[in-house]
Amino acid sequence: MEEESIQQVREKIEAQTVCIAEPLFTSKSFPDKDWYLNAQLHVTPEKWDTYAEGYKCAGDIAVQYVIDNNWYQDFLVYPIVFLYRHYLELRLKDLYFVSSRLLDQDIDIPTNHNLLLCWDRVRSNIEQVWTDAGTKHALSKIEDRLKELNNVDVRSDAFRYPEDKQKKPTLAGLAHVNLKHLKEVVQGIANVLDGSSIGIGEYLDAKNEMMAEYRAEMAREYDNYY
Image (cartoon, rainbow, N blue to C red; front, top):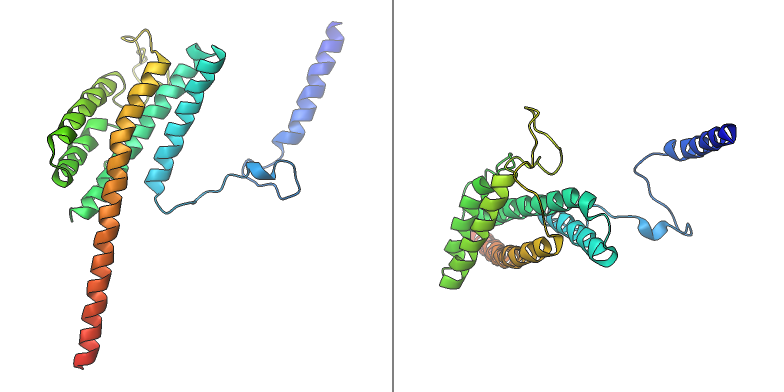
């Protein structure tokens, strides 16, 4: 019986070796049954936005899996929180980029993972575009949540590794995370930040169109003059 089990393991390893020999990144052509699973990269030019949306979507799907199956929550909590945190980082950097362009500011997107370093500029820029009290109130609440997350995971590694570089536990001060509640709070933040990104992006497109028309008009007047 033991010899048979060893043989079965060997057969499984041999079968998997055939699969492992294939390249990681490839595509399937029709009529292969898996052709529809080909994921297309570079779908849109808004690369920061595309990445941000992908990480949030993955987090939402993982939370919904736990809700539907009541299973794996103690394992999925780590990638779920990381996915949401990385979504927030990407969305803030996207907003930093588009709002700085709209306001004719120098663009120097932070290369570290500290959410608050990027947020300070982003909040200031959003408030220059929308000056109403409601927006300021929403941004203040978002800042509270970003501070909360930054205190737990300032370097974006606490939910990726069980210990830091000094061999200390990364999540020693946190015992429980309600995934459904987390998803709902992140969605509330996303409603504000995604909406801001879309709105600022539309203003930027309008500004670029106006500048293009202005340059074209100047070129025509130059040609007519000479």
